[in-house]
Image 1 (cartoon, rainbow, N blue to C red):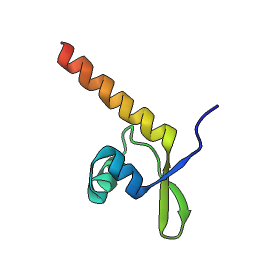
Image 2 (cartoon, rainbow, N blue to C red):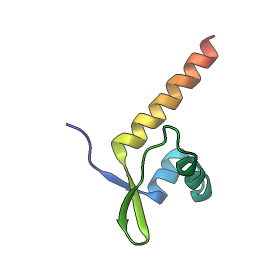
Image 3 (cartoon, helix red, strand yellow):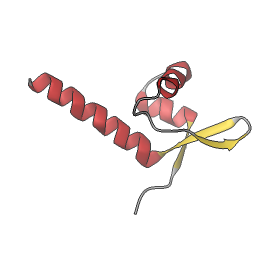
Length: 68
């Protein structure tokens, strides 16, 4: 069963240790960054499972690059 916990923008920023501007750049760039969830007219969130999976994928990529 997948985790359907929704994280706020601030929580995601804290988890990734980035600013809100950087988080917006990640989201705008597309790629493999998790899709945002519109919670209201001025409120967005991200699925915790998606953010954690994205973070683990980045970690694995970095490990592979160092191991070369």
